[in-house]
Length: 395
Length: 221
Image 1 (spheres, each protein chain N blue to C red):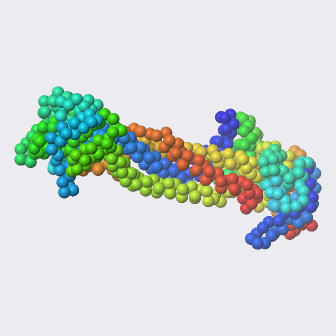
Image 2 (image 1 turned 30 degrees about the vertical axis):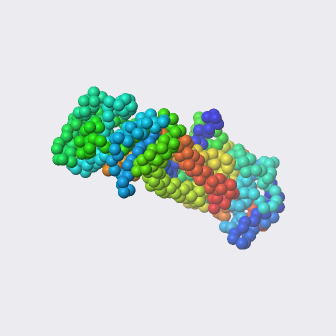
């Protein structure tokens, strides 16, 4: 195939780009910018989807919340034994969680109380943490925090521990025993995992109550049946299944995707304006040059070949530049400005890192949306001009 | 060499049809130098375009080197032009942004010849026209005379047997016109057939011009 390439024709085409100088640079920059924006949008959406999917895997199968007068309230821990007695229920764990407002930074931390002695938590925690010191947590003197929390605390001179203020106005210090793994950073970035007893103290809750109850079943197919049994027994409990949460997260993602979709549409629209401009005709200089070349003995196919090389080099170099710039922008610079559209559904603006996740289908889609379209838009008017009589073109 | 038989050419201009050539019949022998004389709009340039295969006649037949060029498909007429015909344009029609050498080799770029062959051919033509010292200069920075010589070198790069010149002195002063005539004379001496469309009186008394054909309103008179 390479042997079929006329190097002189290719050189002529490259020279033609050079001769057009400012115009070539302008088109290159516009194409680069559009491909960069399109690629960035798709990459961020992809990375966040990956992040959400990773997070969804860690969600409980059933979460039970108690509602009184339409508002969520604490649930009695005694109900756990009744739920555990139901056929098919493997585990039922009362949870204590809530938000803690950290005034100096003006942010909320999500606090979750855990029982480190329970085997499933231990297993999950060791998966979730990078520098997790289980023994410290077991002594109930430590907590595990998301990277965002760690950074906020550090900025406020809490590098090893943090002093909570209880509702009674007393100080309650907890050592930072570990930091969450970045794979689940979006969800866990504002999270503080503290011993259950510590959570009771921080929130000032009575020990016979819990914020909610999470239930694990042996056979996931039985989830609807078990949910039905629980809600029949306790009509004031609302059961949220993993699927409900998945839908809820997906809704948040889809809602925020709308912003990106708007940006995507604007980019595509701008791209097609450039394409339309290219396809709608050639300048008089370009038409004259085609006429001269025909008079000198160039075939129509020679002219189309030269224009193909010209547009291919332009489109491919713009595609590669725009795509590499997007890779750098999204994964190295962490997409400043753009990613804030997606994150921030807790009040802590979490400085989480977008995980590297590039979909080959996305690259192919982007390539076929840009390179062949641009080449076609360049070739069509050139072919039209070349198919006219040369004297007509030159006149 | 060239044989035109009852050639007509009509153009559409808006709703009107303009007849640029009307029943033109002409024969030119190999090595002959023929001047096509006529006022602007008389059909000289159209006739040259038809002979070069740049346009198709509306009716009639055109044979060049025993090939019916008026019936050749586009790609074959281009190849024919590249192989046998050199074109000298009224306004030089050099390609701006290319240097002298690149302009000279432009007709042979699609031929995919080895680069050293092209450079050698270009060197010979540029030396003959005394522009070899300016081979790498952008054509926009050349004088009118130099540009004319580049255009001639380009027309000769394929060693054509037929040169078509359209108003070759229209943009030249007297000195440069004399220089161009000298070049055309040398071409005639080397056996090249010349067909020069012009209304410049300089050409009408030249010794090496074999025949003057007058065109008026698209007809040979």
